[in-house]
Picture 1 (cartoon, each protein chain N blue to C red):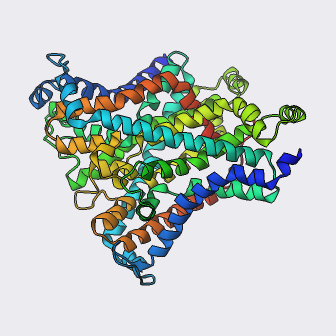
Picture 2: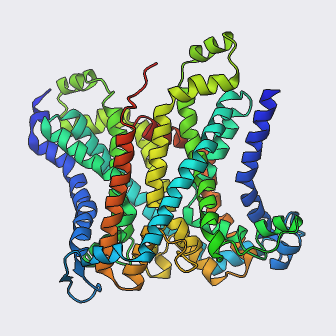
Picture 3: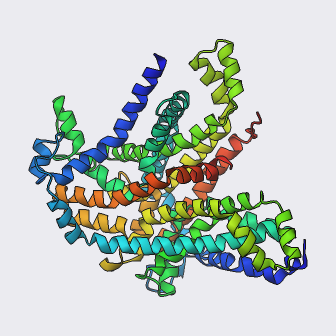
Length: 272
Length: 292
């Protein structure tokens, strides 16, 4: 009996989570605002995809989608390469106090509220002539993701037994060979986790993308969506279709990789 | 180990890219914030050093204090309202056998989505005419409410959206800690005839105190960072009633061309965050890790 009560509470909560999505999904098929107002709860009268076609055309969602994908991928790859190399140096090549100091220094980045760097970073971006280029996002994204990535990767690398490397060293492998042939292949699980988390984080970032780019064709999906809302703010059926477009890919990725994602999030914060 | 590991050149090579990036894109902006924070600067003409003028201005600026207060609301809402809900949900999920995986996966969904898109989605829900919320309230004969453009409801509307997005994230963290408690401890309690309530309050909550503190710390840090949700939903309006420090900083810098003042606020966000999280860690410092 007690279990039934638990399920009722939990299912009600899930309902609170789901309702906005269902509302938007239904609205996206409805003909116009009038149908959304007169029939808010019901299924749409017709299942036409007109709103989707119009939203796609009006909102240039394809362009935004590509931009987001490109920026998120490049910056996550950079973080991964630098993060793995740094973690390897910090856990394996012990330069006494230097390693400890550098590790602590990098972790300091965890307490810097990155939002507060928006204005000073803007100056740097313009000084480097990066304003209104994708690099204005890729470089800060890659950098801001480094502290937590190094933290997670280091935690894993510390657990790799050194016997493996000693054996490989007998076979004549140098530091670079050890890194690419022994350490990296073993570290694939945490590297995948770090990559997914960073990719999602970059994919969803809004503020820097909003203020460091001005050209429409460079915009990322979140910024593009906000622009679309502001331009078509009275057409809620089309806006709903736009929201579905931008939410769907993330939901698909999540449904495939949910275990990895949840594992990564809990590993990152619970072990702190 | 072997000689290659003792060669500082190899060591430096592996570290250099990270340190360089870190220095340029994090270190330099932090120093610049401190430097330009002490200047009068419009972003175009050369900055003029003006001492602590910007900070004096901030402390006398009622709009700035309003934004600070809104960050405080974010913190209070997460700790006082959200945290108990998170705890209850995590305890309930940990206690059921069926659908456990489904609940864990489903509650997490909002926190993987873009805050900007969630802001748009909820903006639509709060919409006075076509929005879901007013249409729902109309059933009970409640008059139209202008959720995001009315001073009295705008802030709470944003806080609810923010809570909707992040509650599941913390539930999953807490759930991981609860599921990490050794089974025999709880089984023993059951044999001794403990009720679910007793099990939760006497065993589980004391054991997961460290993670409760981590969740509080993360929500405080998150509350200090709150920015995009406010920007997308209201841009700080109506009349600055929903401005947080970060949105106020952006407006001063990018709209009013007060870059010096904007950088000073940036420094203040930095200091306030460090003070609050530091203070919190100092208060809770006696919470060493619990060994089972």
